[in-house]
Image 1 (cartoon, rainbow, N blue to C red):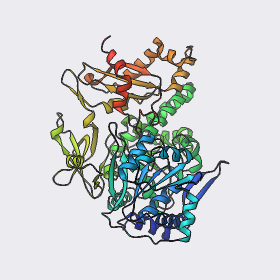
Image 2: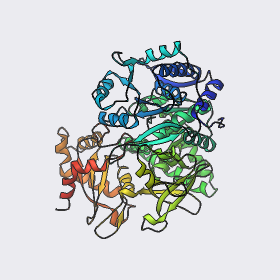
Image 3: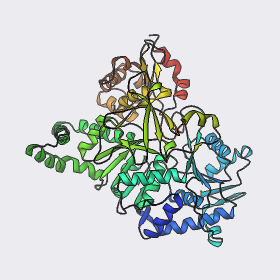
Image 4: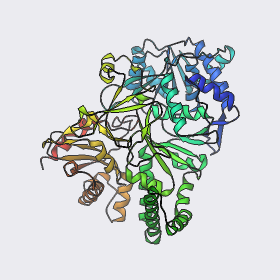
Length: 596
């Protein structure tokens, strides 16, 4: 069980290294397919050397150490080494645009940056003239030269000049996490040791994890959700994590065999869509059995809510679990106890479907600014459609003055996890903090009579139609994304008579559909412009919007052929749509829909 009597991240990590020295911690897949695991003791030794190496470069209290890298053992080693010098860890994504790296490095005044390879080093070097504070570049996998050294050289420096770790005050700044908003420059969220440590302690209280547990880490640690839950929480209890990615997750899950899965709705949507597509393709008896299994599990869940069941349903449950669901769980490693979803709202349909398969998904809510978890559904207090109740130590209030709908308002958070403030943005800090210390999240929500929080969307994204009705687009977009033929979308209708949407089709899915229906799929753009494809998407749009209010429904749409990624600037690194960028590129096509 977790030892939650810690107030800073150095204490958290040090206790675990001492207590769980021989336990595996980080697993990486080698090129030959085998997995190599680093133990807690091995990480502890590496942190000691990295801390000494950074001190040899002149890093001290309050200095900024940045990193451009995906999740790796070196990422965690660098973070804990930095904390031990009372310095500040500033993570960035490999997928970010280099000009964003430069902005962050300049804004935070980083003295040292760790980069993944020589290519990233070259991109940082292009901006050196604008980075007067940057003194050293450390390359994880590459060559030294100039003011750059390799990671191995850093560790060697530290081995010959060890430096003891300091114990930071809980109010000391631990990290700057830059939120890549959908508009404007990234904002540096200042999180203290106490912010993060308190959140880890609260999560451990409501989700008991032990040293035998294992996660599959694919959420970026540059994001608060991945960092606090997949890294610090796992380390705090002596558990282990297999390092994977969204692209290799399907391949790696059977090998990692996780007992817990920390994820976002997108992944659960993929499981939902993938299984349904597979059953559609198989057809016949296989699909009938699968559909019957899902119906039985949903009926079983409904009865369980009332404390009831029947012998027939339980017999069916055991049979379907053996024939159908156990095979699905085997594909996810076979040991999964539960999954935790955050980052965005998961649809009730998907949550019910995943639960029917035998995997309980506990949905929560949080933000980078709250380190991040605010509320969570837990084993004995779970309500589908909600994001749960506040975790220990956290209070949530609703400011109804910002929404015309009764009972709905801005979510305001109070607690030890609330950020110190935004770095270098005093006016923003004035705006987001209430007089009594609450943090204005910018999210719309409501709290029901049982204390469960429901998310309604973002305040800044809501708009008025011509008829004066308010629309929050994100719940509509989430429903559209439930279609297996839709990869991404953005709903639009500000000061317009009705909503329209820009839809990015799932290329593999629509090409396969075209081939099965005797259409020419060789020219993708021509396929998207065909009447048959428009009719398919029309049916999908209508089907996914059955529960959407009439005035909110998407009446027309445009199909886009290019994929939206962080690399091409259409998505943030946390995979949120950059609305301003989308409108700049597609605004004329969306406006033209109202001219027809």
